[in-house]
Amino acid sequence: MRIIATIALSLFLLPSFGQSLKKEEITKLADAYLVEGVNTLRDFLALSNLGSIPSDIDQNIKWCEEEFGSLDFKTSVLISDGVKYLLAERTLDQTLPTVLVYLQIDGQPVDASKWFQTNPFTAVLKNCDRADCHEIDWNALRKDWDPNWRIFARSASDSKGPAVAFIQSLRIFRQENIPTAFNIKVIMDFQEELGSPTLPSLVAQYRDLLASDVILIMDGTRPPGNIPNITFGARGIATLKLTVFGPRNDMHSGQYGNFTPNPVFALSHLLASMKDENGLVLIPGFYEGVNLSSQQKELINKVPEDRTEMLESMGIFQPEMVGDTYQESLQYPSFNVRGLQAGWVDEEVRTIIPSKAIAEIDMRLVTETPAERQIQLVKDHIEGRGFKILDSLPTDAERKQFPKLIRLESRIGSKPFKTPLDSPIGIWLRLAMDQSLGEGAYISMQATGGSQPIEPFISTLGIPAVSVRISNPDSNIHAPNENLRIGNFHEGLKMCLGILTQPYE
Image 1 (cartoon, rainbow, N blue to C red):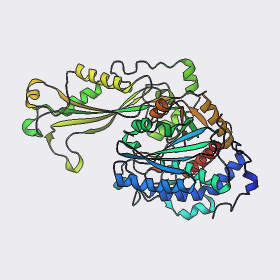
Image 2 (cartoon, rainbow, N blue to C red):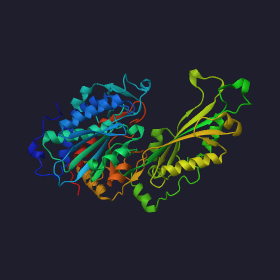
Image 3 (tube, rainbow, N blue to C red):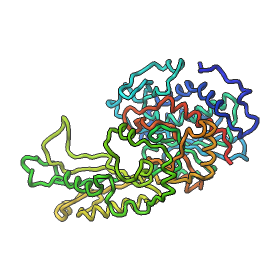
């Protein structure tokens, strides 16, 4: 049973397309359909969704087909380089604009041993404070729900939660007989966490089918402070795998210590040469082209930021010094070591000199720092440190000829994008946020630190893009115990309801 049994249709029935709902009406609808939406999300979260497993993709496609079919959308499976996507579309009036909505459906891998629940794909509801979380019964939602309760499951925040907030808003409109203000197309991506490698070819192949006026991205977390926001850009990403080679085989550290070089130290010295103690990248030219004017800084720094609270929540003494503020730091490319490997540790530790040492790197990119250039800068820096760069395992001849051998493997993922804050899409979304949340209850950000595979839509279709941010910043996305705050899901419903009834001029 809903919080309120029904809402009189006479209150909400719109005489024509494009009449926005009032804030009070939006809140009542979100309240009335919250529990139904949460139950839908629970069902969806139960489906494992690794993009590398075809059966996972198929079961999630089936679920999405049934949901959008029940909402009077036409669905079709699109295939690009053997990878499946799902398109759902509904045309109300050919004279209306068309909004393309991007939904990410896949999730990161899970290590179930690190989760505080039996199965990461079986959602649990918990009441959390800073010190502890304890599980509560789902039926508690039907009585008097607390916005601070959280749903724990893989993809709860990234990004099935935002996807279901959008789907539930469409269901509300259907059940309450409320028309949306525009035609809608929805493209669902089942390999976003793999970098959406076939998305550019998909957009090129189905350009006419995907043609729209704007694209909305239902993905991404909010900044610290958890204020509802719309974000007008994202950084791109490129990854590197650096393998430094030592002896041909692992060697006994007692018999060969002081004689056989350990590749861990060679890799450590190399990494240390790439970034200083303040977090500034030392690779020549890495930041070239990024120049923030005082006007840009003023605009960027309108986003509220409590540095003391941020440092305390992260458990760190001080931030890196790339930008003067958190928001400014997001406007620069980053260089991150995301993983290291050499030998064994803990119970498996052994006294050896490892034969190789590996560093996995990710670089977040901005529009001024294209991936190809940044990768070449890294290569030039490595060669300048006396390494011979290989594209495969070293041969015996190479081992005899070069003192420092490294294999470099690179991959370019999503490209960065940036939409002007004062563009028509920005004006439209701010009007929608004013209607759904109220003036001053949200923020507009120029860019997020993460990456999204949206640039192909922008360059191929010639349309602007903005992401609608629903998930809480402390949601543990990509990590164990990922969660979505109930209050954020509720606000997500309100944001979607406001957008869907706001005319796009």
